[in-house]
Amino acid sequence: MAPALTDSLPTAPHQLSAPVDIFPDGLKTTGQHPPLYDHIRPFDKFPRQITGPTVWKAEDYRENPEKWTHTFTPEQVEELSTAADAFLASKTPLTGISKSNFRLPKLADYLETLRLDIIDGKGFILFKGFPVHKWGNHKSAVAYMGLGTYLGYFVSQNSRGHVLGHVKDLGEDATQIDKVRIYRTNARQFFHADDSDIVGLLCIHRALEGGESDIVSSHHVYNTLAVERPDVLKTLTEPIWYFDRKGETSKGQEEFIRTSVIYLERGENPRVYTKWDPYYVRSLSRFSDSGIIPPMSDAQKEALQVLEDTCNRLSLHMILDVGDIQFLANSHVLHARTAYTDHAPPTPRRHLMRLWLATPEHEGGWKLPFWDSNEKKRGGIQVDDQPPVAPLDAE
Image (cartoon, rainbow, N blue to C red; front, side, top):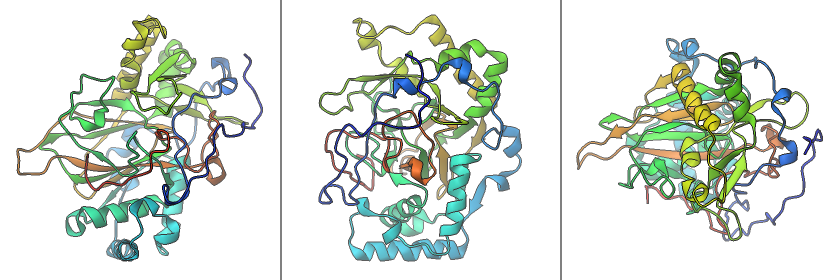
């Protein structure tokens, strides 16, 4: 079917109005869906080279941390503290936090500038100096989620409805990739993007060893592949890839999604978007072995490896200390994590609080080839009417 050039989107396939007794902000995460195949463009429509601020090299930042870090000033910490205390005093559920009930009059302008840089610029920031030990998990979670509301709308991260996620080793078997989410283990996470526009990670406790972060501009990776391996790049743009949903499905939904890894925005002057997680591609043998979906071709297997190797070669390494917050754009930044070993008890295990944030089209988000591109809480993982929850620790 020929790719559509129209910029219109169909009507939402289900009712999105959300009762406030279940969804405190009245908004429901739209969840995972196949792309609009009419909007998937062939490889000859993709740019030969990407230019602009989204294309960056690790050497541009490796020796210049002032370009990508921001240490909270005492005044900014105090403003966050005051807003968090006021929110806690209001007894509002944490799932109901928003810009309207978490006021940051002085930080707001800076956060709007940052938001634009994450969406349309280099796509990442590392905050330092968030006083997690002084505040404890509850107040830290409030301040962190409140900060996040200035960058996007939080969406559910799993079938349990977690809008405040926890990256922590719960002892699950990382080899059971068709069932287990890797963030709940201490295994390596290969380069990937999450099911949201922006992902945030707040470090509560560090590991004894490992658990360090690597990020890469997927636009720099694209340009590199366009020169070195255009055949691999073409394979990644074709809608022949199947992504596992690992059972996190609503009634009547398929257990997998067919899509491409790299695709274009809708409309004029479209940008290149990358959506990838090798764990979700490798875990589908239970369907390919039974003939439900085709097995990965040799070209796909090679593309998977070449993409990972290229990301590793071009990546920027960073270490999150306690009180650091990393925000990344999933549209044009891929991220990875090294395997790690925790301290022996009673020292706390490595623990990161995670946010998935959505940025709809009408608020500056990318024009994605999905029906929910203009919904406030686009993306994420939503199973039936599972309400949002914000646990203060992993569960």
